[in-house]
Image (tube, rainbow over all chains, first blue to last red; front, side, top):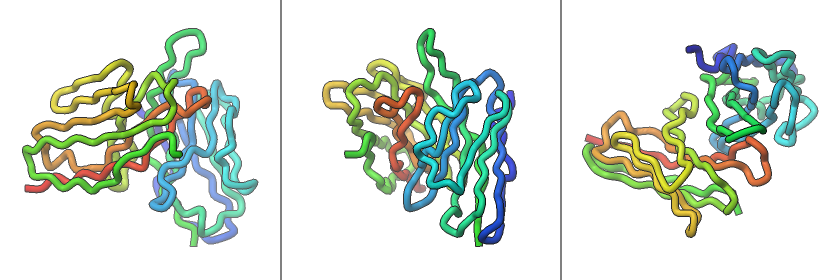
Length: 118
Length: 111
């Protein structure tokens, strides 16, 4: 079975440019998470969705960041305009979350997008 | 206080050694915990889930001590390929299905 798919794997862009990161979660999973990882701050949750609805975006650094999930199999994280301090690895993860029964919290990560903003 | 705290290491051990990592958590209501493994420049990968007192999978054993609010990961007969960063993970307090990740413990297994 395919795991979480992310694209692009690497992105190098100039300050001020728009960057769009893409994610396809594992089929059947109903929760999707966007994380950012840096050496200084570790792994930070940016935003997560349940059933395509954004539940918590408190981790989004500022208005330059936005995320969408138009359907159960696709999500985007957009940075506009990008800045050098946005350079990091951005991971997408998915899991199955049930309100009706036992909740499985395990999250499965995609390979990440390594973003460099010059 | 951080929700999950780990010793960052690094732990340098010879091949074949037994090594243990501890992790403390602050949310006493947490019911499930996880250990993830992350190799350099790779994504975190789920290693073990801990829902009760512990879990064992081959050379890996995870134990949960609810009274003291810590979980441990024991690796027996360590291999060179075990070299990685091990992340302790717990549900975020009041966070629905959000997880909080420790900063990781680095393990280096040497010849």
